[in-house]
Image 1 (cartoon, rainbow, N blue to C red):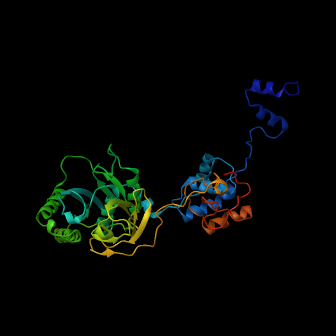
Image 2 (cartoon, rainbow, N blue to C red):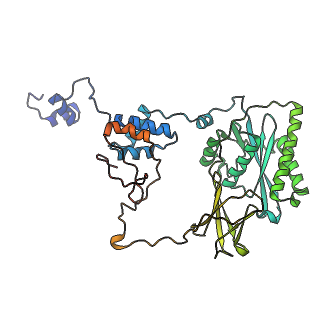
Image 3 (cartoon, one colour):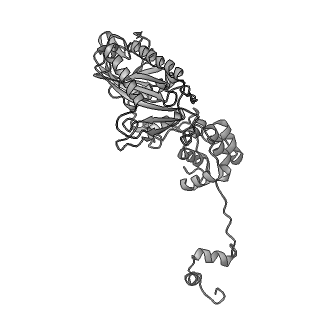
Length: 418
């Protein structure tokens, strides 16, 4: 057709093909039945990506994509994810893989949790008009433990759950909860946050079916707890009440051992609790004393009568005190619960006001003030993996002040388009 004088456009219209395809065949760039060989631009980055995932199995794909874009990867995010699934294997992380296991293995315990509301706690406990108790029952052996908490919101639920599991000596493979907050949403489904909490402990969450009244074992434990609460809990301190509750639950272990209930294995717990953050409001009393969990913390001068916030992350050994706007004004080592201590040592002065923003020629540029998502810093082994292909050390992600996360000024990598 070309020898007969047909134009490329006419040939493309007659054959119903693209003009670029027709032109490639006419120039000899393509052969019939042979697909064109395209260069996979992800191949030089395979060692770097594999090393980063070996260092951090939970590294997000979008964070890894931003890193290799800075190293010179030119393709789109969807192309990157396809290549990542094809060439790189994300290593299995033990607790996460165990959390995805199917129920019913038959060799590991299950834990059934239940909330009990305790009315009118003693005023000295500093927990409001009601108290909560979280019970954890091993469904096969019958052992149970309980923990007192001021409220049943998500951070306090995580704290009570961790205390119950550590009193049991481990966790079951499956957690059974009622379909109520904070575990479930308003439609009765387990929230994504609580799935992450269960995965951290190596378990998975199941919602107990609503079949009316709870089982006889749960009803018996509730009755024992409420009888103890109304009879003698008001005469004890918070720490003493928890100790008495521990002795009450341990006493039932002997009965279950005598009846010959079978015991199943428990999975080990992580070394620290899930990093949930407890935030409560408190008012600084006379002499600058701040009351929290049965202890007093001596605030800096000028805070008497002020309402402040107390923040504590469960995996940290200190707590922070903030103003109403969220500015941290003091940080204290956390005292044991209900110890009656007065902690006067705080971590040095904290500025109450931020420095004034520069203006005019001294003001930073818009690019220097761009706020990005925090990134996971690449390990030296990952840097060496990509250096073989680029001939230079890859640039570290830059912070808001234009400096790299390693502390030195960074320069853009040639070929980066991110």
